[in-house]
Amino acid sequence: MASEQVPRARPRDDDLELSVEQMRRLLDGAAVRTIAHIESLSRQPSWATEGGDELARSLREPLPEEGRPAEELLDLVFEKVIPASLNTAAPGYLAYIPAGGLFQSAVADFVAQATNRYAGVFSVAPGLVALEANVLRWFCEIVGYPREAQGILTTGGSLSNFSALVTARRERLPENFLDGTIYTSDQTHHSVEKAAMLAGFPHGSVRVIPSDETFRIRVADVEAAIAEDRRAGKTPFLISANAGTTNTGAVDDLPRLADLAAREKLWLHVDGAYGGFFTLTAEGKKTLTGIERADSIVLDPHKSLFLPYGTGCLLVRDGPALKRAHALTAVYLPSMQEDPEQPDFNLLSPELSREWRGLRVWLPIKMHGIGAFRRALEEKLALARAAADALRAMPGIEIVAEPQLSLVAFRAVRRGEDDEAANAANKALLDRINARKRVYLTGTRLGSRFVLRLCVLSFRTHAEAIRMALEDIRASLEEAR
Image (cartoon, rainbow, N blue to C red; front, top):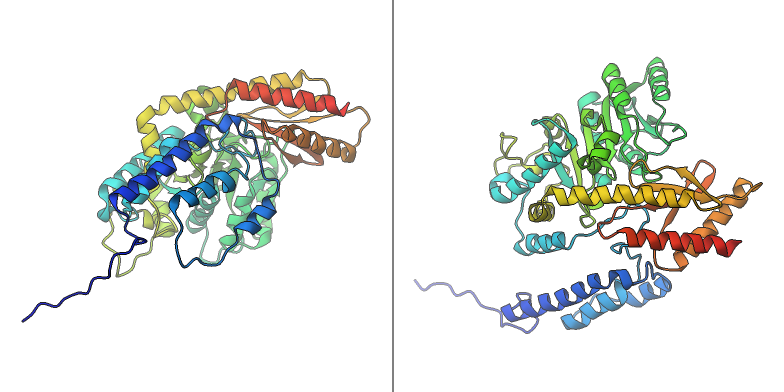
């Protein structure tokens, strides 16, 4: 019997399988441009979004039928697309909560995505899962969690907060959970309220508790709200505490909140997306005392471990609770594991299809050791204190929030000026600082006051960047006089 012949398509120049030489040329072109970009970061403007609407319109195009040379496309990306943005990877980026973007992690991502292995099920890639499990155990060790704790790597704090809230809901509430109530501060990141909304809670389920003069949640008010809700027939079940707020870097009184949660049998969740990794430092560990008592903790390695955007983490003290909240299987999936040392990540998170995120964390930690990250974080704490001291010494500047970690909030003040006029003046001050394009700051509202924020977190931010920021603040103040 003649063997069947499978027809072969004729190879074309635009075949999706690149030759060895084509792969080398593509990599070389990307590498040369990327390295040149990183080398010039400190000389690039802090932002260049003018004309962004026109650029976006010029980039709109129909679905292309034929391809274009890679060199041409890389030139477009590096010469037009990337520059028209905030320079988030630069030393002078002191806005929002900076993310450093370690090159080592970018290389790890290239390896992970080019080899394209699936790491959601242990049995299909045991070595890959083992490396990622190591990373999660390291994170548990950093925050002081016990051996039975488990975690997942996510895309960031928003998804981590969502999974934490779903886990707490499954652990502490019945199937009809609509009477459950959640307690947050007026400084809590909006992703917690969004997580509650996505998890199906009615809008009124989130009780927002006022913060004190240091922007920490008022624990006595939380206790009073819990009692009030119990009397009203509600079911208090979760306190969401802050370990470094976005507005001011405030850290709530975690020991008192842990005591309250224990007395009331509530789940204590800590959003440490910005601040959690400061437990690596002696100063940060003291500030964050009590974080180890939380039932769940959110960390963002793409913030205070300087990794690229898209790297978040959720840790849960009672590791099996993650599985109880997320596990579901199907006949087409391979067999799952019972050994918690061999996790099937699809059973611990909302994701089945997922990239192998562990390598982008594992590689830089293994290359440099955690001591290098600790020293970098210690430097950021010291730089923030130095910036606050210098700002305090400037005539006409008021420190609104002293650094509890590496963020200071301040504003310009004039005698007799009401809030409306002061806010307009401070918005104008922020615009003048950023118009110099050497550093980039952002503002926020604290009560009725508009304030400026200076957040020191990038691994590339050193004393020179802080000196430039202070020079530009001082000069911008002089322009207004």
